[in-house]
Image (tube, rainbow, N blue to C red; front, side, top):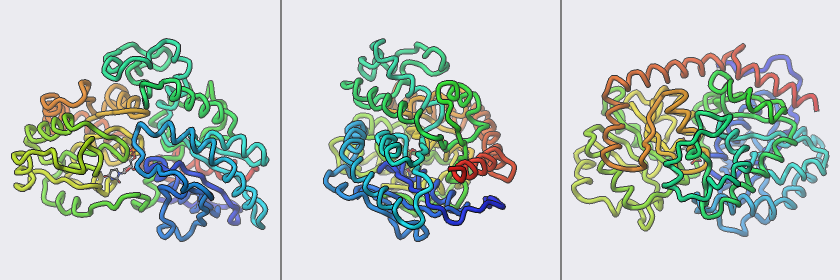
Length: 459
Ligand code: UDP
């Protein structure tokens, strides 16, 4: 891959990047930092003291902790705490962020521009006050952002007020965003839909005022959605993803990946293993956990399963699993780890299917390795991502009834064993081929990166 942006005089101009302190947001922001560093910019990462990146993995960056951000313990953040986290950081941490920026701007090399996660929406006013250009990095897909931006207007329809199960049943299409359905609307705390919608509204308004948006996606995947988005968000859009394909898998992981996952995969034939992981935030009830276990057991297919300690409500780790199930592990058909080197697992020849929660990073990583998906979205952008995987790109199936062992077994067979699985594989490999092209010189993401560099240099 050739990532050299030739002929530009960048001279180490400094960019300040401010990630959201959550795994799925931190990784793409650090990947973006690496990409921009490779074009010649110098990078300062402004970060909270909880969930902070490990500076020793990025000796080429400067790290600046935001003072006072260790006062709260958000280290065990799950989905129910995300909205409170966003309100908290966007009120309490804005003054210290401003102070850091003032300090950096007064230094010799100054600051060319601030790049923040879209959910640091409060920083737009800070940047305006300092006359500092702000570019937004949105870590989701464009299609899910469209739905997010439309959600506040849908609040009055009452569709957020229903319980999760009722919502899942709602097949009504969202006008203008078909095939997205009411049941795909983002949810965090269904008991407080106003809180979710307020966050989304603030994010959309601040994003509209930003100088530009950077997306971890690529034109060939979301061209139609980009057109729709540009009508409401006329800012320049730079689609330069998939970020993680620019460099070898980097270590932005907040947890330690279990490398034995790969030696276990080595023992299996090509495309035979189902890899199961629901990301860094999802928590599930014990009854659902057991349905997953029996669905996997009954499918008779080999599986590599990530079970994060604490992700099963009421349990430390694997305590709820019965002995009959654990025998399958002892026999070698299944392997359970606390955290996997996911990008390497997906790239492994033995991995034939990814049962995912459809966080955007996981979805994109699966697409890039041509691994068809079984989708079990839980909240936020996972729901629209899953809809696109199953209904638009047609590269996987969604478990429409949640976690039921019969449906799980049938989905595994559809993707791993049946003829239909080949069709999913062919389609996703076709998209994978486009990824390889878009990152090469002259490709869409490559060209967009060149445009982004020019754009920043124009400030
Ligand atoms: N991940 C990982 N090992 C695991 C599970 C996840 O390295 O065992 C990484 C995965 O590759 C992805 C990120 O964690 O880059 C999860 O981000 P995503 O947007 O998919 O989901 P989130 O955690 O934000 O819900």
